[in-house]
Image 1 (spheres, rainbow, N blue to C red):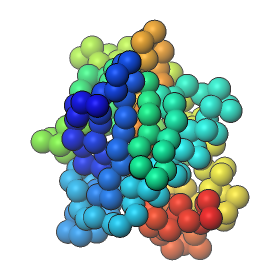
Image 2 (image 1 turned 180 degrees about the vertical axis):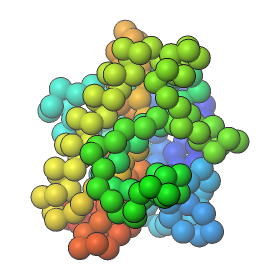
Image 3 (image 1 turned 45 degrees about the horizontal axis):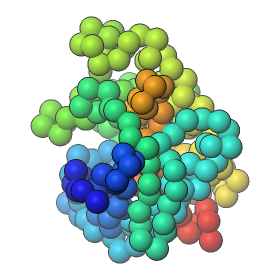
Length: 226
């Protein structure tokens, strides 16, 4: 294996044959020792976070496969905290696509003049650039097209996939009495140019509440799978 990238929450290795191995770590994003799925920095280390993230990710990626939604997932090794995936090319230097059902986090910080905390949103989709230096700025469909990052048609595909996947996740959480507030995805192109979901789906990239109480990532995995 060849280490090709050291990320905040995962390390990426290139395997013989062209596929990749993601090693999930116990580091989670946040600030001042508090977890925040929208943060640009590692805020703390939570023992068991990597295993929990991989377990929930594996559950959801298998669900998406049943629904014929294309992803980069091949297989997982829970004990080793690793996931084998096909290669995918990111859009530009990476995009994050957020689907919001409630006004919280960065949405509330930006639009708090008009929005109330926890206000219901109709599966609002926004795209941000992965750019830590500039605070992951939001970017519009027109700007993505003009800068050559994403075509207008690809943007609509991305938006449709985001809403479909988000609704599947939301429905699964609801079976356990959990309310999805927002969720963050990453997408890329496979070898044929098809848009596929990459990265993970876990408590580390979503906000979930039960009885108006926020559920930490590890607790969410236990609630969903144990």
